[in-house]
Length: 86
Image (tube, rainbow, N blue to C red):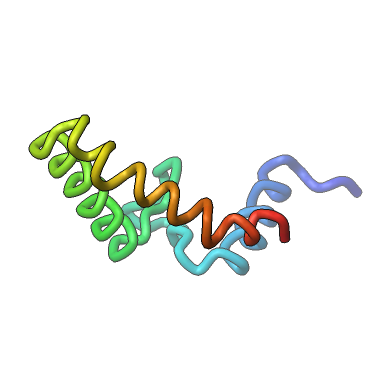
């Protein structure tokens, strides 16, 4: 006998939660959200992104490019370019 779509959906949810420890638990406050957020990772990544954007805006584009981004790009290209070959 074929399983109903609800049974199939429940089985898929159980399999997903087995392999994703950060998934919202059934019947929890977060169970109807479209995605789950791992708070320590989210807040650290958000802080670093906002900090990077703020520093770039405050210091300015030309200064950042000539004194930070270009030497960083050249350093990565010269010393770490072999990594992309792997």
